[in-house]
Amino acid sequence: PIVPAAIIFDLNIGDNSYPDYEAGKNAVEMALSKNIAIGSVGAGTGATVAKIAGMERAIKSGIGMSSITFDSGVIVSAIVVVNALGCVRDINTGKIVAGVRGEVGEFLDENMLIATPNNSIDNGSNTTLGIVVTNAKLEKTKVNRLATVAHDGLASSIWPVHTRSDGDVIFGLATQEIDVSESNAFKIEAFAVKVVERAILNAIYNSKSLSGVPSVQDWLQK
Image 1 (cartoon, rainbow, N blue to C red):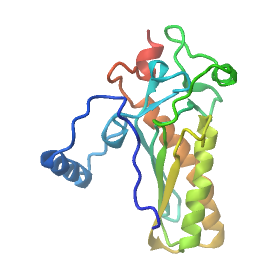
Image 2 (cartoon, rainbow, N blue to C red; image 1 turned 30 degrees about the vertical axis):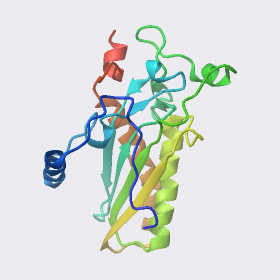
Image 3 (cartoon, rainbow, N blue to C red; image 1 turned 90 degrees about the horizontal axis):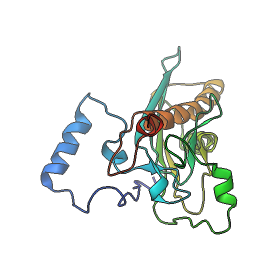
């Protein structure tokens, strides 16, 4: 791959302690474990969203996963670290589920905030990272297309998205296990969008409040 890795800027959460040998060892052990955690863990520990009006009005986010298996045995999965400038919308209802905090338990109108001339937007602490994986046999050009199409999942779930204040990226990966026809390749691309959308919602709904930034559950229950 041309770009083998990516990170989020999450220094607004927690302290400036650095990982040591033990932290690295624990990370490897967890990666090899069958226990899969989502929410405010791992790469999603410091993730936040809805920062249009600054960190003081942000909502806690994290890392989310989603997967679908077809009758053919082909699997399409997504892992997304949601650290966006924008707000998160539930594509099923069209409603904002993680927005800019206003009055207690409420979200501000993100459209009005963006339209406000004096609104200052942080340019250095946002990005949403994702990977879409399938066990289908796909050549490189099709894997590249898979990653490209998957960005539609970001666009349908986050607004604003792909801004100059974000560094959004999605990686594509095919493990080359199951032969697929052209029609099934089309199906994989189409559902790549859906698993990204679901992974984003899972990241939001499974995150916990941290360092003064409330989760959606805690904010809406106030």
